[in-house]
Length: 209
Image 1 (cartoon, rainbow, N blue to C red):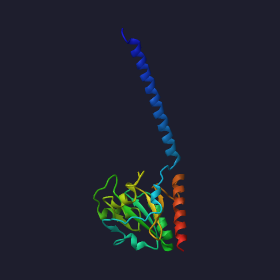
Image 2: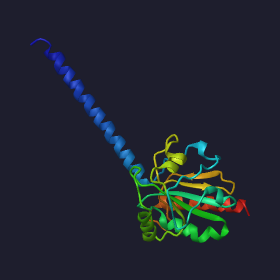
Image 3: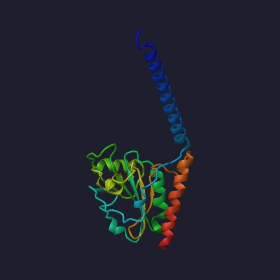
Image 4: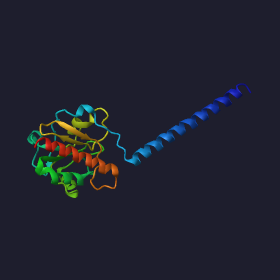
């Protein structure tokens, strides 16, 4: 039959190529899984964020305070955290609020509904805050206006649960893209991220004393 050997050879090459691609994908999957299990955080903030003036906040309403503007907080160190209903790391934020408010830190959350912008009521956010024992201010950003200004319109931005430290002059000094941190977490990475963030808070508070 004409072309028979050629067709058989082509089929064999195709099968070998498919096996090779399958093996490569398997190796990539295993490597990704091992990295996730090790708690390695490969995300890093775009360098242009550090040292820039913190953008103003656009909010629909506030919970725990009548209203709040970034300019009102000049002279204080600000921890700005974007939150959704999961309120990851709420315990750590509550602890920072309790320990460092008297030393010059103001913890502020901006609530951004996920996975996409949508209308949200003040009562909904108030209930979320009560569930997690949150007493610090929470601004509502249903249309992601503030979130986009700080993070999502930047290069390599992939996370919405980001923490910013803003100094007493309104300048961004530290960005932590990992949204999970806790002092007593069973996760080593979560404990490490907590320690890093607390150290940066202490550095900024000392700089204005």
